[in-house]
Image (cartoon, rainbow, N blue to C red):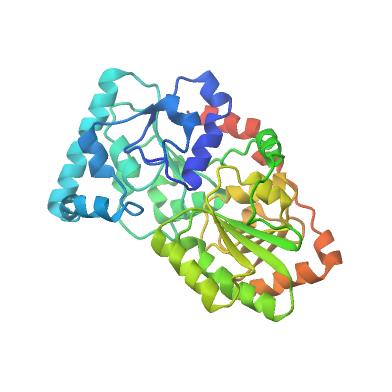
Length: 372
């Protein structure tokens, strides 16, 4: 894996701040140095493969044009099935043997999807565990059962994603469990008290915030259209989008903001290392996602007492108590729900989000210790 922005990296950072890292000698194997500088708290745990392997696994989606051009020959090779797959396997086996020559591990965990489970399967250690952070019901179909079958345990990050995975691979149901991502209540509350020195962020009107990686699945490009409907009804508000992503996806949102005439209402903040002061000062957190495995941002908002409006993806019902934590609605009807909360103070005041005890750090760590 790499340490690029996104839910998997956030989940890993939160996990490494718990007693798990104090009670165990942990190494984090990453394939390239993307995101390392932005995550200094993880640097002391990091080990990396050789330069050739780093080049092979480099994600060039957000790379510069020059890097993309230089990486073109490798991309061509990787996209040639009979050759790319063979080199993939060869490099994965080399990395596994190289790591195991330097240290012996009691447990080997694949903490990300895509290439990581395929690599970790080559470790000699029998106590291999894989974490699944995505909804396999929405995943592009490719045969991975033979890879997952080599793991002792499969851990999904919500009950919904556990059931979705088991439905996709029924033969693996017996060894598939779920454990929620860690949220540090005390840390989130402490970080939320930090000052915001950001001229773009204005909370003098009803303030909405949406946070996540700028990617198609988040459907942030739908926000300007929803904002226009709110504006047309006379609502006064600011809607902030926080997160980093590719230039292509970012430009798509900017174009939608301009075409819907909501440049004064919808503001792109970019990525922020500490989102919690922004969440704490907002009136509402909104998720427009098409799919989420374990929406950590919901738990974080509930810890800070901020109501949520979410699109109706599968796991949303697991994390939002309708009418208490907020509301779940279709993307088409979302503007009506938000309008009601902006204009009706009585309706808004009925919401009283509270984080569930099942999300307590000690509960989650106890489950993980039992698994490993």
